[in-house]
Each structure stands twice: as structure tokens, then as C-alpha cells.
Length: 246
Length: 167
Image (cartoon, rainbow over all chains, first blue to last red; front, top):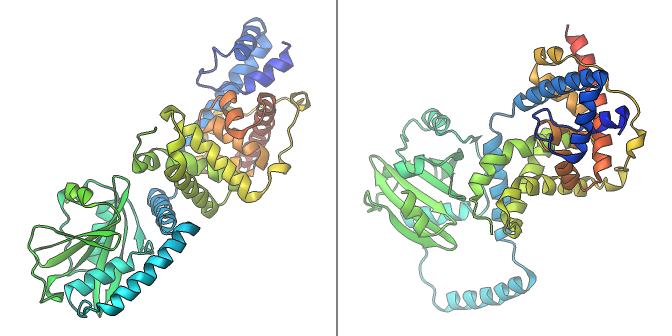
């Protein structure tokens, strides 16, 4: 190996010394020991590489990047989980026809407007697509600050088990003239949505402070009251996860 | 089978992937999109990965393939023979770089030709060896070396110009 060839190899040599045992690099380094000019060049090269690497690693990232990556990825996964294959789609069509027929012949009254059951049904429907968030952040204090600003009446008191997970963000939701808050979390790889609304919104709600679990379509829900608020958690995950974090 | 939680994988690797994506696209929105798509692919296909130690490489390789697929630029990445690299690297004082703003050095990297930015990013930000870079980018070792040498040359020229303008 001559000096020029050694320079090409040494230019690909990381400044942290991790390549010293590579046979090609070792051969070039042997030449460095014998060639003073090459040694000076290599020392300057490694110093410059070290300085550049340090600066590039320190370059700032967008503040809310993690939350945006999480939310965007989860949204893609949500869409994918709802995109059936052709045979599945055909089977679903047949099943849907059956369901329509069954519903037609066994009609039962749907949840009354303004009731908690209607609210829960509407919120699970609302989450069929990952919602656009007013703020995206993985920091709960920022979510709390936003809540205080947007919903001075809603002092959300989240279960301790949930507070240890990173948030995705939050937004306001209008429902039948009521303004409520939606907080989104990422818990053990699953998106968990928490709706918070003043308890007075539902005179019919007989919810206790202990969570009540229910399955609404493909979604699992849990609801409870605490102080003046009513909490509704919605997730694609199973009940076991909710029991673990609530 | 990899037993890693999705959230853990995202938290540990999002910054690395985003920086790599940014070096390829030079656009924040496109980089975010590529990063999300890579995690999406891991969530849907990552189960095929049997060695957890190779996760980082898998993510980089997947992101790079997605980038190539989206841009349809594969044919514009000609392989350069190592013998073509003749110029010596211009001297850049490490002290000059040390005094520069990190964002400015990143801006300099983003001005390097597309073909050389990917290996440079893997080299400087990811501490990848030339062998690993060849594996991730799917190019011969000689090509990686020549792209690194040419890329460094260009990067240092840009850094020097930026440092001069700054003072």
C-alpha cells in the first residue's frame, strides 16, 4: 500500500479508533508509523473528523419531533389495521349484509342523544381515524399547561399508572355544544386516548370512581368519575392493558 | 424474534433516523415522513428481524431503501472507482470547526452532493464503519471509501466557506 492508497483507507477510518483492528486499516496504520508526513496528515484528519462529528451530533432537532414521529407512525398503523385484504373485504361485505338484515328485523333503540352511552359511542367513532392534535408533545407538563389554558374547568387528574407513559399530544373536541379535552398517550406500544368532560354534562351517568370497562366495536373503553370530571379512555388495546395502567 | 416494544424502538432511534433522513432529503417534512414510514415498516415487518443487535442497521437500510424508492433515483447513483479519488482533502482546522455553530455544520453537510451525504452521515453521526456503510447502502467497499473521501472534501470546502463568512 502506498501513501495515496493509505490516505483513502484512513479517510474512512472513524476517529474513535474503532477500526484499528480492521486488516485494511491496520495496514494503513502501519504505514503511518513509518511515514512522518502521513502521520501528520492523519492526525489532522482525525482531529477534524472528531470536531465535525461532535458538531453534527449536537445539531438541534425539532422540539416536538418524538411526538410527531410517534403520532404519525401510529396513524399509519391505525389506517393499515383498517385496510382489509380483498378476500377479507368480500367476507366483510357478506357479513355486513347479514348484520344489516339482522338489525332490520331486530331493531332496538340506539343510545339516546345526550346520554353517556351516546357520548361514548360518538367518541369511539371519532377515533376511527387518528385525530389531528392541537399540540403534539411527549411532555405531560406541557399538556397540563395547555389544559389549564384551554379548559380552565377541566382539571384533569390522570391515574398515576398512566402518567408514567409519554404523551402524544392533546386537542379540544366539540360534542353537542360541550367543549371537552382529549389527551393521547403511548402506553406499551399502544395509543391510549383520554377524554375529559365535566361530570355535569351527563345527569344520567351513574359512574363510580372505579373504572368500568366496555367493548365498543373494536375499541376497549374504560370510564369513571373523579372530582368534577368524567373520564373516558378509548384504545385499540385489550382490557388487560387498561387494567394495568389505570 | 425481536422482543422490543414499539415505543422503546421509536424513542431510542428516532433522532438517529431523522438525522439520516434529513441528510438524504434536506427537507424537514420529507425527513419526518421517511422516519415515520421506517418505524411503520418495523412495526409491520420488523418481526422478520431475528437479531436484535442488527436493529439499527435494519432501520438505516430500510430508511435508505424507502428514500431510493420514493425518489426513484437508484439509477442516478453511479459507482465511482476508488482510483478516481485523486485530490487530497483540504485542510480544515479542527479548532475552526469547534468554534462553529452546530446548526451551521449541519447546514454544510446538507449542501454536500446527495450521493455522498448518506455515507458521510452514517460515518459522522452514526459512527458506522465503512463495512457497515457498504452493507446499509448496498454498495461495494471501494465505492464507500471513494464517496467518503469525496464527501469529506466537499464538506470541508463548504465548512471553510461558511466559517469565513461567519467571521
